[in-house]
Length: 266
Image (cartoon, rainbow, N blue to C red; front, side):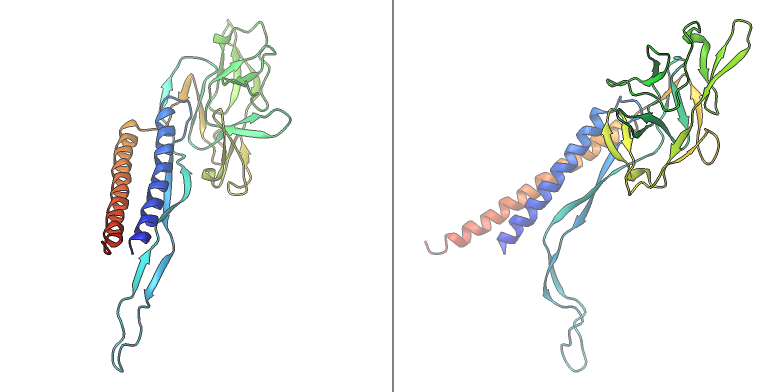
């Protein structure tokens, strides 16, 4: 029945519209530090069973196939792809790139912890390391960088220590930073500003120093680039547009069939 085709094609257009929204967000964040691109997963809807497969058709035979008509498609979820982005050389001593698994831990106002792969840190008025977003969230367990220590003499070690190098070459440990990792990072909740928060799906965070307990190591003077691949996203956008167009043509074909039925009495 053409009416069923109208509703089925409409579900396709609605689901594909959401995919276009996700692709647009990926492309918009192609230059966002530490951004992780997402994809849309689809699932088919219920089926209308017209004939049951395996029905006895005679004393000696059964029907090998049934008759089922699908009722469309729906978005099952959006999945963040937590693969590592490329390293970008910045030369800024407070920038940090995580080589491997792990997140920086960020303190939220009023308590709580958020997590990020963005390592664009700067020093605030108190000498603490804060994330370079519009809120300036403080890095958890941030060391205090003394006022008399020039920024160009401060840097990261691979195991997460902040060290200051004196004019005579001696190094002074200013503090130790730990990373966190999750069993299911795709279950983290996006909070914006390059931040994620834990959920029941992500599991509890495991905290450890970089280079231990499965954590990645740190590379100072580098930032993790967005994982958005422009060519891939544009190809997906074109494909999605074409499928969207085919669904609209299905609606047009169903409408034409209904118009023929409506004109039978004329």
